Length: 285
Image (cartoon, rainbow, N blue to C red; front, side, top):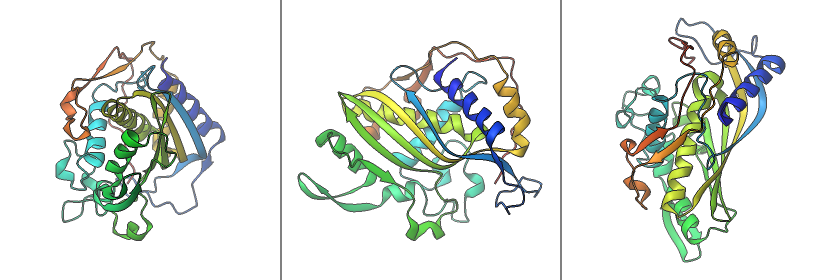
């Protein structure tokens, strides 16, 4: 059993046993057939992953291809700083694209905006991503290494408000640690996705800053399981996990974050339960 398996099973059991139902509350989300996509949820979940020890991948189902798509999305947001769905190799954002082919002023759009930041070298104009990298390299003792995508002034211009909206970075004894704050999470469709992509981002930032990857602390506000996902979740948490120690290999020694490509990443020492077949997972929108 991996760290990711343990956290996934424990969190899902907590939701199923202690969660609140959204029925009768007028939920926004709908299934493809137009019916309300209700859910069971708990508020306030924290899971901690030691990324240096093990890359966070569940073995309850196959995530070997999913991880590459997840890394592609994190590069789209943090590196390309794009809101154009055509800049992605997958189609996960197609349903949120407007007539202009973008998701509005969300995610990468916010990271492309430049601000005047106060630094040890005076005021410097840069975006949030470059500010994080600057501080990690030039002021690693800082306790103010943060990003925030939840720009209230422009929420009305976003086709979907950011789910994973905030990060905080910290350097301790040569290791880089990351806190990821997420307002809402679909456990079946997104939990493994978000942990894998931000663990990969942690590894990328650690490499370019000459640090070791430390821990990923994942804070989730509303953590939920949709009604049509409950049978699938029960099938997963009753499955037999596999003992393995997944590792993320970055086949690019670059010290420049903007040189990474999705082809640079591979997973080694990963295995999964080959008996579990979930089929097509319904997605609430």
